[in-house]
Structures are given as structure tokens and as C-alpha cells.
Image (cartoon, rainbow, N blue to C red; front, side, top):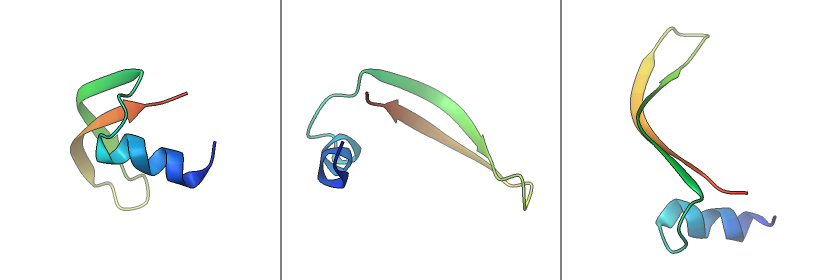
Length: 42
């Protein structure tokens, strides 16, 4: 998949196949925990 396709998913122009709501991303280097939603495509 080309980068411009990923941008369409990120902008919400195309629906993602899976949406993980209220997720937490952990930065293992700094220990920071970032609350977010994650969209999965392909």
C-alpha cells in the first residue's frame, strides 16, 4: 500500500477495517502512556 492510501485512512476519508477505541500507546523509552484511538487498515 502506498503512503497516500494510509493518509486517506488517517484523515477519515476511507473507513478503517478495525477501530480500537480508548487504547493506550506506551513509549517504552520515556515511559509515557498516551491515550488514543487506533485505526487498523489492511
